Length: 362
Image (cartoon, rainbow, N blue to C red; front, side, top):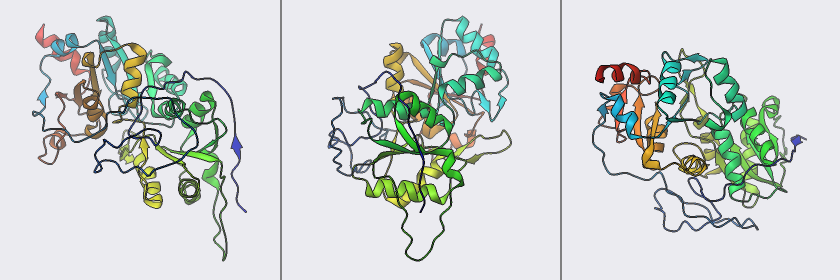
């Protein structure tokens, strides 16, 4: 008989109960477009703190064609805060993109608040802080928001019961953030070595006290995890299916693109016939969290990223200015394709263009 070992820890994390991501079984979403969401009615036996209905990643009217960034000073002066994606913007894999340190120093010298948001859930905020330090960048933990943290913050925001467990398909970052939030979890990397021996009459058991399955990028992904997560979602009444992101690709190295967290989420969506609650970009959850935490007016934010369907849509969902950089997954031909309906306000090759374009306009 197969079994999963569990880990538990109790800690505190400031509850954030006013903002929600894509959808939630705790609130009335009858006003949402059925083409966008079809949540299954669930009965959890507990009630969450009352919260406003979230703004969704819905269909937007056609936007004007993105303009090349020509006057960096004008954009810099028009906002108070820059939110940067990390992979493809600050670094690729473990390699820093040229000109990043000087660009960040220049923006700080001009009094701009910098925030770094990543859909990569493999690390906790503390672990990401160490990566910034290793790359020679001075960034505090309070300036970093990873989707691993967003998953734990979301569970806190809906008053997820502490006597329920979370099954994790993902890596250490999610486990650490859940531990800090005081949630009991099981799964994670240690289930990567588990195998299923299919024999006549074999029945795989699962923990019936699992109330949420969190799926993120997982280099130890296997059939055991797919089946265990599927059983929890399909057979445990009211079990949540939470995704840190649905990114198709990611930058594990600077040599090529690699299959992203969306591939793991897609496997569970296929086996359960359920759509997940997405807490990472382009969900509005992290944007609302950041605006509340720092007291930022969203009109005073510029979102800088390399992905149209996550970074740029994230900024547009939050009514922010948007800047696409071509140093990551999106090429100019992809941006200008007639099949692309997501248009940022501006685009440029990399964030260090802030320095050269600034100098050209002085």
